[in-house]
Image 1: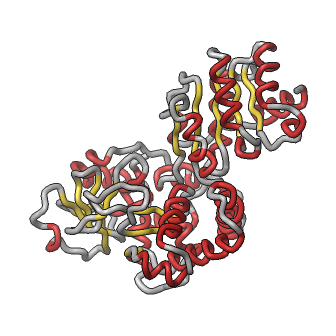
Image 2 (image 1 turned 30 degrees about the vertical axis):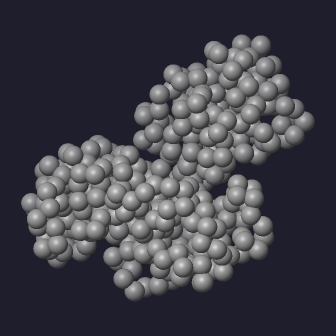
Image 3 (image 1 turned 45 degrees about the vertical axis):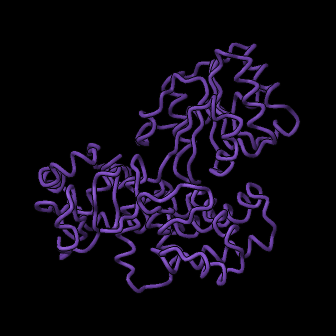
Length: 398
């Protein structure tokens, strides 16, 4: 126990507030039980430490623990929580919870017994937190920490601090907003740099190994997380790697399950199950057609890699790469806080209200001119006009 307390104090002491993720101020921290999802490397641990330091300082009432610590190979999580509570502890921030067997059941038991003990938990395996929904869904407030927005990237990389804008504000006032932002910033080159290697905060310390680190994390998800989460065998893992490879070179992939089944060598139901899993694991974004059924085995209309960093890391098909890059960015940024659907009349419909076509600076309105609340998101322009909005401005939604 003493070693855990000392480790927590060291981590908290070293925690800085120079940069904070958007979710830090969006979470309702007064809730007793909070779970934080997100892909490896998006900043979940740092955010928990920042909250602990901001709320409790160096008080002994709160502790940060990682459940892959050797302590938890010899001691039950429930027993640790009981000891800490009896010592006056009132908040436990738990990381890497998936490393501990039956963690969701024990957290549920702790929650039920100690009503004034706050628990915040996260895991580098987003799939494991999805798996725990059955035990904790009625108790835990669950949040998803998304990849960096373009706005956050500008703050972290260039110390350019700019506000968040709602989608409604952008659609109504994009010209004024864009003019304010570009008044002091050359935005397009920074946007291109962000698309390549700006989606994960570790770009600051990657030192040329950004893609190597990203590929390692993807392999861990495929070879470890999915193996445990879906109880799949080694042979299926190999085919899953092939599925990801096929999708990576085909995005945006207009989903044809029969074709995928032949290419990968798996049945229709297994393919749909694995697509659902890699969507939950933040490797792909599965986009449904507006109005389609939402059943477990309903196929998505389109598949995109989750973000543009993954596209640069995995895609080897240079044909139509720019178009794919634009749509991948748009989907990634809008999926945070909005409902994104494929549209029969355009590229996307957002929140069942806004219709969007994505393209280059010369993209015209012919396809959507008769659709209410329709817009073009155009790449390689600093400022738009009418209903043509700069694509980069969609990076200011959070």
